[in-house]
Length: 310
Image (cartoon, rainbow, N blue to C red):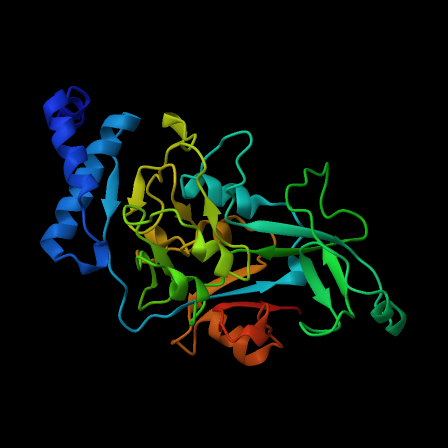
């Protein structure tokens, strides 16, 4: 507590020096280990001062022999959105009234039937899941999804749910377009962002076919009492105005041998997570034994997020 108290009374000169060093900080993945440690220590001091509690900024690197993967049973999803809420709390997402920063979107769609007749109805405007047709023909139907619904009870009658988040692609188009190389794929799978190096151009958002990235248009609203002090430099540490953020498979947890927050809170066990390189992991067994599919597989982004149904 003595160290935290000292931070709370930091002099203006010390604060200015810390901010100056952070402003001229280089690209994290190009730093030496010593430089990385200094950068994390600076952030720990700043966050501890700002939030009035001891904050840790972990730097655990990618784990050898690990390739993180995710599988989701669509038929078991009841649309409770506990995953989205847990993600917000775990990953220090802004709680602003008008913010649209949730990393997990659970699309609610009406159940229906598909027929050849519907193939002739054209391609309605709007984002959703395309049924029939392809990118070069107008045929098909788009099932639009609402992701900020607040039902009295779930599952709702005649509703189907499809959670969507970052697919952690093996060939991520977002990485290819970043002009400053602030976003990149880690060796153990997650695509991450160095927030201090992001210039806010949002080209990655335009390139992402899964609507998985969010932009901070204003200073995030993160109450001190709600701030999760256990953070990772490339993960859930507090973001700032003008940068992009996204799901990282909760690397502050998964690199310590824990499940992502969304997996832990799912009441139906619809979400599964594990090491794709381990044939005995739960997610590997699902991929081997179930009929799995990947969203927009035709784009050859090779997501590490799989869907399946019992």
